[in-house]
Amino acid sequence: MSAPFPNHPQLQGNYAPLRMEADAPDLIVRGELPPELNGALYRIGPNPQYPPRDRNHHWFAGDGMVHGFLFREGRVDYLNRWVRTPKFETERAAGKAMFGTFGNPMTTDQSVVGQDSGLANTNIVFHAGRLMALEEAHPPFELETGTLASKGYWTFGDRMAGNRMTAHPKMDPETGEMLFFGYSTGGYFTDRMTFNVVGPDGAISRADEFKVPYSAMVHDFLVTRDHVVFPILPLTGSLERAMSGQPPFAWEPDQPGWLGVLRRDAPVDDIKWIEIPPCYVFHPMNAYDAGGKIVADVATYEAAPLFPLADGTPGDPEKATAHMARWEIDPAAGTVSETALDDRVAEFPRFDERRAGLDYRHGWFGGVERRNRGDRGNWTEIVHLDLETGRRAIWSDGEAHHVSEPVFVPRMEDAAEGDGWVLFTVFRAEENRSDLVVLDAMNVDQEPVAVCEVPHRIPHGFHGNWVAA
Image (cartoon, one colour):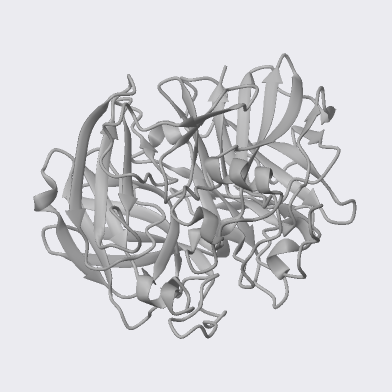
């Protein structure tokens, strides 16, 4: 018999796990789904199967659950499935949690210390015919499209450098390549990273390893037509801290940040490290080359949210809010300048990914007018930002309706940039259930094109992507 979940803020409300797998064919639709929406939206997030072993549970540490919306002929079916990682199967057999948070050996049951603790809970991408659930401490975990049945880890024919893949690979729309990195490779909290490139056929074409200034949580990176940029920012990792009961990852504002800039056609020995003031970026929007410089639009924090200081004390919440900013990186001069793009509190920035690594105009993100104590980090707005004119448009159903990351879907493959829809889920707190909302991407402040009613709530999650039929 499973024990009750503890009274923990990241296990309550819509952070609480959904304790069932379900199929809901032919969702009720208000409005009309565009017939061009033919494919699937997959979203993923943490969804603990059992109450955690650690008192200091972290939202990031839940088992992965995928939510699929399958579109065809103006109709949409829904299903959700846990990703059946080795950790999931071990705990299902035991009937309880066996692993500590992030696999912490100090809080893991001694019978499974050293076994695989992968979560596969952060992003879900499709490349070269494979649907892969990702998190940043393990290889990708493959699922069947449509059914979401688990297939197991995929390591590109055992040719990838290292045993970890970021949850945020980049797809090059011109070459068809997928580029990704791994951090802390070769063991807990090391100062080593890897850089891999996968061709459109799914085969590894580049696999390198290199040293970084210090061990850090590197959630995402920047890719342009000519460059990659690895951000090493002072959300540091420490095995010594973890073994002494202190936070494994902690914010250390006395450390500088570093951007490692590398031409895509150069060896990793040529990485140029540029020092920047301490800050944190979970998610960039896009980056591109411009006249010898690199332009990068990022959701940047003065201090990393959700993590304590190295001594375990909480950080300053006033600094742990992100806004959209533009970095101009000059590799020749070794400098980085920053300008504000928007004053809205922002996260989960997305764009028309047919322009990935290229100059672009339109972006969308989850927003909120201001952060208020006790709002638990919910996002209540979908914001469209026209980077050419500076015009901002906002959709919101009010403070009791919490949105997920917006995913852009083009009307057709050769449509103009931004011509299409943004798709996202909304948690209706007063009804304790969720909807999938479809907006006209260029007119997000108008009424939704369609609203698809899900008969239960979809817990707050991380990322998703569209896979065309």
